[in-house]
Image (cartoon, rainbow, N blue to C red; front, side, top):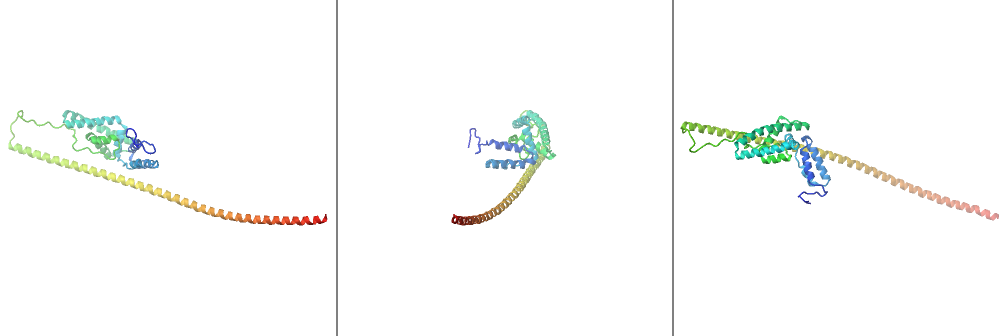
Length: 317
């Protein structure tokens, strides 16, 4: 059912916000403990009858070490996170408006803050018992640069539930101010270029264009390689999750089989006890009947003896 404000309430009365809290907790959990904690929370939701909540929790994917460190940073340093997001917004605006002075100043801040925040992320990871490798450290820096360059990446990072590291777009400014447009018109001065100079300029332009194309091609290849690496990590993480689920299912099956075997043994023993009790009851009934017959016979014998004693006594009188 829906309540005021659009929040859903589960049939058992628990606010659906609890699921968001569970997901926040999971993505703040070190990757090595993520899967057991996720299964524990999903099982609790299933036990409470909240099947949809259990499905959402179980669907959460384990983050890479770098993504977890980036999540830890935004959760543990809210003020630095806010200022960093504001810097990214200002930097994107300066690039959009070609504000050369602003772009130069903000780019200098960007390099400094990315370095500082990536070190803070590494420190937070160490305090949580996880040490970032150089590769993971570079992935954290890549994520921070993506946050500055891409508003969608900024929103994802601010949510604190990254599963993999982020890659900045190749079109983001490199930190240099955009070139000033060439002056044209009557104010342009100087002698006209000779054909040899013009030819040399064209050759240099063509060489620069080929270099730019090769650089862009290399960047695309690197990005594709990074995506393939992320997909591989995701696939391996999914395989690990599946193996862990299979192991738990095997353990549970073994426990159920032991419980069934113990129950069957108790049932067999109960049948034997029941049959023994039935035999003892029949034997007791037989003894009771025999004893009753003996009592009846003894009573008859006693009455007959009493009559025999009474008759001679009467004749004497």
